[in-house]
Image (cartoon, rainbow, N blue to C red; front, side, top):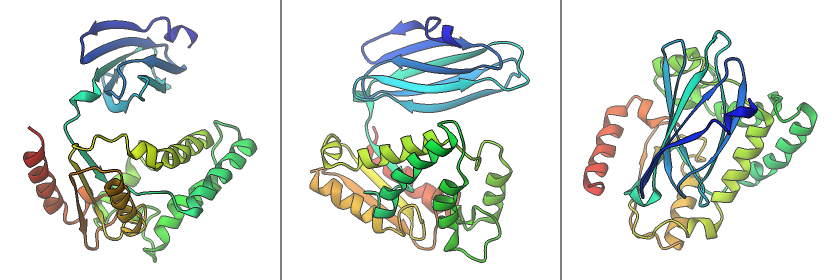
Length: 269
């Protein structure tokens, strides 16, 4: 919908907060690009004629740019309303990283080239079975014999089944998303980008010892070393033996949650 940008309006502004509102036409995929506060955390909320509301968090870059696509459901007959509430980066008191990793491996770096080849083959909006096989399928191999395609997420079978049954999880994505994600992972692993993290920002990193995303802590340890080289002063971490990718949905999630809350209580005031 070409009118979406012109219909975007600034509803409120202060030194540390902004609120934007707009509407998208039913049945249309609408690209949206806005300029907000630099390094801001923004809550995107949307609701349409179904009465169901959805929300997620987006982050602006150092120039304040945010870009995303929005689309109503096929059943919608009325425009959907979107609201973007942004808070300045100066309000960030601490950072928590779960199930993360460090510098992409050589295989992941090669994946950037593969993603571009697949984008040429299938188009930017096309989907590639090969890219899925090289990532999620590889993650799952360590947990053979597999009960599902997502055993690598958690030892809790009920949580895995909930993920599999959720239409908003586990679906195939476009080749362009793969290109963007892999490029971003390489970008944020650059020493000059990691050096932009405020040195006095408390950072908590936690993951499962069997999480394939963090290469069973090897890649996470590389990230911790990189933060140390960048001079970040307060980085704490915890590895949970036996846990997989989604530690907050793991069999020991009560322990993980208690540790997280204790860290937040100690570092966020």
